[in-house]
Image (cartoon, rainbow, N blue to C red):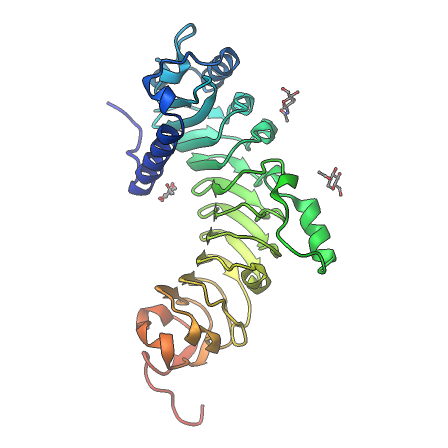
Length: 340
Ligand SMILES: *[C@@H]1O[C@H](CO)[C@@H](O)[C@H](O)[C@H]1NC(C)=O
Ligand SMILES: *[C@@H]1O[C@H](CO)[C@@H](O)[C@H](O)[C@H]1NC(C)=O
Ligand SMILES: CC(=O)N[C@H]1CO[C@H](CO)[C@@H](O)[C@@H]1O
């Protein structure tokens, strides 16, 4: 009998890619022949104790090789812990263990479906300078998206001096290697810190939280996916959408409280996925969308009005993309009344 939720398909895929990455990067450790680093073992035992000694971590015993502990510790050839996946830990009630920040060789940290895990992300995480992938999903962690995940001071500087060319150097962030940040399905609140999308980010997923405030503008980033859906974000995100030099391929801002006039917005041609549904967008559907080859497009549940632009890539979008707006007309909806 277990009270743990089964992992979602996406979680399983992420876990599989984690295993593949760690396996291919560190074949030497696959036999778990290397004994683990004593400091890392001590840190892991503190993590276990800070979690309240869950039964699921019963293989985590002193004087055993921590590289073989389940679930799921991964080491490199030197026995340093480079990956940790904590999931399905059963019923526990504990804050995020600060001792995780002592695992300074960590490259991938994944915590999934641990609803009893609460409290803010501890400041000790700023010591995880080698972290490439931070994935905390389906927990009760609260508080802000930590400022140490961004390089706020530098982005302020870049915005102030628009002559400065090139991406924000990620080396100035506390976690310069961070590329994949998924903090979806938690209880994070407050505003998204400015400078969060620094040079090395590829994926930023903050969906299903309680984030508020405006989406901060971005000057330079190589991000592929931005999913900020299902929060309470407000304001006009268009400076954000177009600040990105190499525009994100997937942008999901659905289920927020965004308010802007879409009429003159020029959407980047690289977009493949754009979901702006369930917001408070006004004006008419932007003509620039005719030139964007979107595989997924949704502006339903907004306050748009007027004739839907026709031609080029617009033809593939069905009526559902436009449902529940103020007064949209034209294909694929009903023809506009002449004189409108
Ligand atoms: C980071 O690690 C150093 C050295 O172990 C420690 O002194 C410091 O308190 C840690 N920082 C945080 C924020 O925990
Ligand atoms: C960023 O700016 C704040 C206040 O403006 C300052 O206290 C802090 O030390 C700065 N951080 C860095 C890393 O420069
Ligand atoms: C990527 C991923 O695993 N996302 C999941 C995060 O948690 C929410 C709800 O807790 C799921 O719906 C997502 O699929």
